[in-house]
Image 1 (cartoon, rainbow, N blue to C red):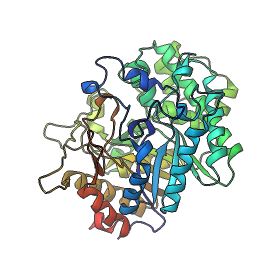
Image 2 (cartoon, rainbow, N blue to C red):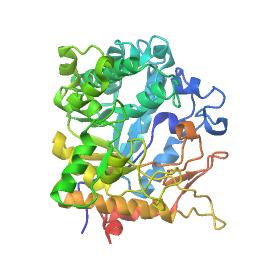
Image 3 (cartoon, rainbow, N blue to C red):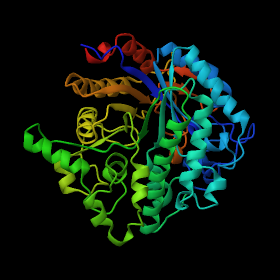
Length: 452
């Protein structure tokens, strides 16, 4: 019992969370650079200024990836490192870094999967209205064209946006992520619509600029409702709850995904938002609905159907004593069966698990190793559920663990540790955790180690 030999075993990270070097070699300022300077918004005043210093240590980091036997690495590119003002002038030194990184990955037998935007928005464009400015779609497409023109002779897998539910919701509604503002509901929906337009125009730009055949997708949060049992009625109820909108919230699947895949907003969402829905032109929906090659699913936790019926969506509803991670998320491995199943049924594309992982309270032990048995258990449980999906002929291309290394976890600073590699935030020393050594065996056996 194993996964297919073509299955992509990977890990993931994001530019702002690991690169550091925020003011070096011509990089422009991002909204996260500015946000981190505000008192009290990041745990213990941490910043991404140095992060893991991946910008200078990428060769060491790729060597660790190769030691684990990774087949793929999902990285993101810092938009302001490539275009300091967000549009116009190109910073060749920034592009050169990503060229060196891609070349090192390929030389190590690791396929790069690039995400264009993982939250480090150019501050210069934010000052011109950011996601509230309709021109953001053109700005993003121009950036995509620059990047793809330079790297697509070597890079075959592209993603446009990472988790728009989060960077719009937490950054522009809650104010707990950059840029740290609280928009009105109508403004929020306008920003969300422009985000989807940016996705569509970026897909067009990728297709137009690609120098070889490529696979294009996006990586939204995949929110999964798990059935209480497996009777047809219970499965149907969980599927309905996964995709319905019962209240006016952007923390949803269909408001973001239906325009991308169906070219329309969900009727229940339009009813829920009512007068706050912004102007949507017919050509907008044609722009947003661009053909994609895979569905990227970022998923860490799920909801139980009976709990969803009793609680608001913001309450996960799991009973007292249910297993929880260090950041207090419930452990729900079944998301990697029901999520791929439901999303493939609805949208019809192959699935890639673009993020799944766990924060643990691990540290360097007296013997010099980092023992993280809970992470090993977490991954194994999730892979077993994912294997069930694969065994039922649901097309799943790969699994990217989040994250390759401990890093800057946004508003939580360096408190949460998701990595397969331990990073000492003071010395920046790297150590492969027990989970990293174990993941190497998972990859070498096409998953059998996790399934036994």
